[in-house]
Length: 374
Image (cartoon, rainbow, N blue to C red; front, side, top):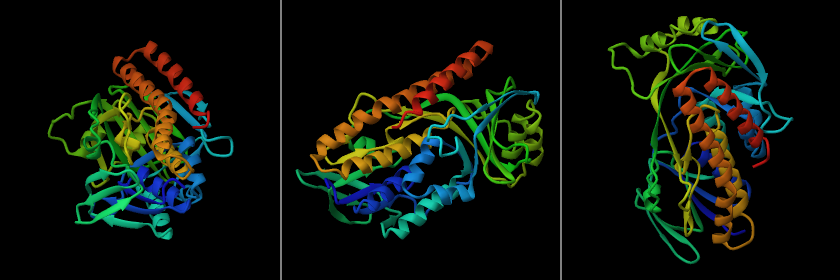
């Protein structure tokens, strides 16, 4: 194999998947994560089929499906509550997997963390990469705990707020999309059995995804600045949903003051014209590409990155060539996702029936292309 000893920086979905996939191929993996403990993020996540395909490939899917809710449909509503259409979800992971799964992010993380421990991967929490030095046959890493060690490869998976981009002299940084998102996990009815999206209301869009038999992850897409009107988070979320009815009445009425909910600005990033690697150090996932959640491909593209990198660097061959070929393989697919998602952002902000029709075309084309194996 080209690499036998790898340092992974970052313990989110990207970092944990690449760690598991490398360890399963016989690589000695050390994972460092700046957080002092594994944090289970409280809100939900919508995971498309091509991410489920990756999770199945590493043996994680069945356990994830035990905690989440899988389905093959997407329901579209008018803000009044009237159903506009119900359409099949694109099978981007193949016919043998559901089109979509909703789950708590913490449940997805816990399955991956359990696998990390089962595989004997060394984990150092509360630890960061401070610097690296490339050599012909290894890279030397200096960690914040004082450790200095040599590796065959360093994989940076430290997210959209990556500190490693600067270490690799990448000049791109995250940018505002012009939109923000409120998220909450709350109760659902049995009829809310697939992702639902509501259009035509006072905000850009409202939606929900079932994540268990009785819970859903609900969201509202808003403008890019948070209203500072003095309301509590729960009251503000309820206010945002006042113009949405049908299933959204149930969601609004069941939001509790102590529910986990938050608002965040939606940011994006795509390092399209600079290398993702420098010598024996490479960035993957949200550290080099992050897109708004309008087609729920963030986790999927990160998971694809992780598995394909693990497959690539455990082949025989020159590492520089393998990393260069990996980037050439991933950039067109990731770029298509980011570009089309940002087109959808523009259409959401513009609004109007013509925007909705154009958005439908873009989503259909995107999922069609994603149905081709990565």
